Length: 337
Image (cartoon, rainbow, N blue to C red; front, side, top):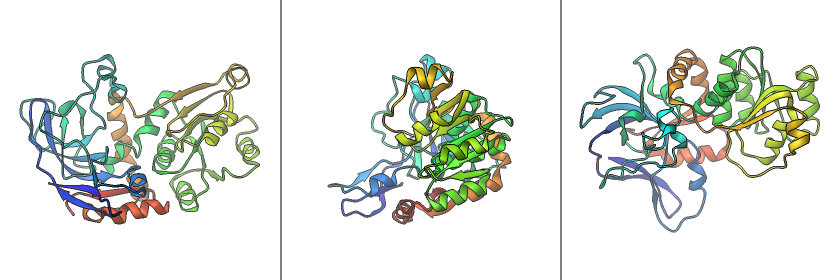
């Protein structure tokens, strides 16, 4: 099979690797859509040797099973990220993303990444979807819509809420889609012109520039002077974390999604006196997948705008270079082109 590679000379392309084989509860999935995440950051760095093994988002079809299980050959499935152990309380609760034990691929197998034509995955980490949903759209159940969907489930975002989302990269843009679907008023925070424009097109009622020294006043103007009901950061920037806390109304809720560093937080001034709730979110409970795929089935027009670029995996270098411009929403690869 073909997999993507970053070469030591600074280019990208594909190389050949052995096809995986089904064994025990590990099944073989033929990948049909590969949503791209932050792998491009590794592409821009210098390296002394070739690098392979990228990606954690995919949708495809089951092509080989070794035993009777939860999926059958021909099933269309979303490939969930990571390899949970499947037996701890977190995995059993649908929160495999937080599994502390993990699991390895069977001995002799290496097909565990999604920038590839095939992947080997435990059957319980494959989430089936219907033929009415395209592979590209279904793939948005990973990082495209997944993290912000999980956050909104935790915070019970609804049509009575004004929600602020900082960072309009692909995860944040997916949050605009999720919030708009729930009927919430979404305030986006982004300085990059392409992404700011796309956020507005996807349903944000306002897009504010984080470098604007009057941004807090503008947020108050949009919320009757109270602040936002709920907020989430998808940038990982410490300044955005601080803005979330400062923008919340009394008894508001915020969720950290973007990976980042530290920021100043006052137990009394920020937490106790305001009565706010802060939480972190990485993915979503697998028990919520039926609800998420239902959302995906109803926001097809928005997803077509969200997915701004499609490439064959043979063009992976061009795809990474396009991501580096910042002028993208979600980018997807076809491993068979």
